[in-house]
Image (cartoon, rainbow, N blue to C red; front, side, top):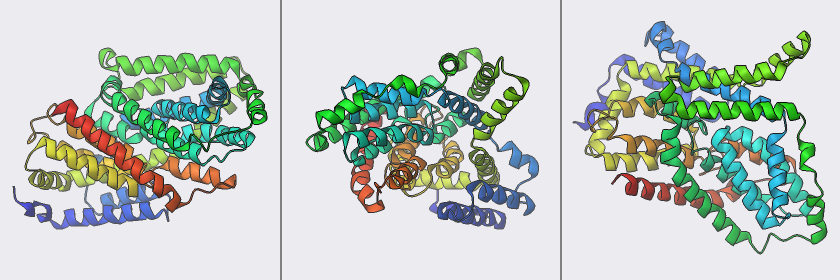
Length: 442
């Protein structure tokens, strides 16, 4: 294969590449809303004749869209019960409000929640509790917040629904919930354990608090966090059913998107059951309003844009170039994809990067021995994109959210100050992932 294949495009392909490149640059500059950028980019592709309307809409992965909408609705309803805050406070009291123990507990809770919720929701729930507890203990929240950022991005890697890149990869390859759980959870647990252990070792002498302050934390009644006990029980039942559905999806013949939407509809019915007509409508509209429609339409536009590149053969040629670069070796391709994904995801949003990589890597499968032989590369894409989010303060949405919440409380997390911790964490976690994949497959 000649290296020149990357430049062997017609005018339409060059136009599409330019359009996507400009759209991505605008996305990264955050000058225009990201949903507006991708939708405009997709519409321009159609208007310029780069793809037809039918091709554009065929590119939308409705399984991913359904999964996102369903899980957003379920999480928002569950959040109304106060479950997540309850768990955080309960965990803090279980270690007798010891500062170091609290750091370990909150990081663990963040990692576990991030495996089943989106990272932004997780930190929005955990960070306020963290700030409340550290305020009472008269401690700096800095190490707690740092570790929670890292735990959110690493924990989200463990499952199909934990991070958008995994949702994209899982839907494109028809991978099951158990595929992710079996393959990625071990490396997530190893990385989390090492990370928490390192933080505990580094901060063990600095995290001390007076007995009177610990007593104040022990007096917090975690049950007061539960605002709706009935909704709590309903949410736990439906979440259990949805997770069971994900695990058995390949056996019952249902897509994960259908299961998530079905769970959302069931919980919404239970949430509004028995309420007056007007209250039912108000609660339903409230939950629908809490769905992040900006993200949903961002994905729709992104799918259409990337499909345009696929239709024009751009991604297939890029895949051929990558094959030449790695000499057709799955092992070399895996290593390259892992590290490139990590560094790109540190600097830019990993969602458009992964969305673009998926069809490109798919075009390489036949030359690399088929789907099964190429699975190490797909797992490398997932681990690189998710772990790479820890590289900088703008590497993941959760990082930006935590920094904003901390700044409002008078504890700013500067870009360079974060970088001192984030770069070693990212490099170490990706190195561990590299060793793990090598041992698992080679």
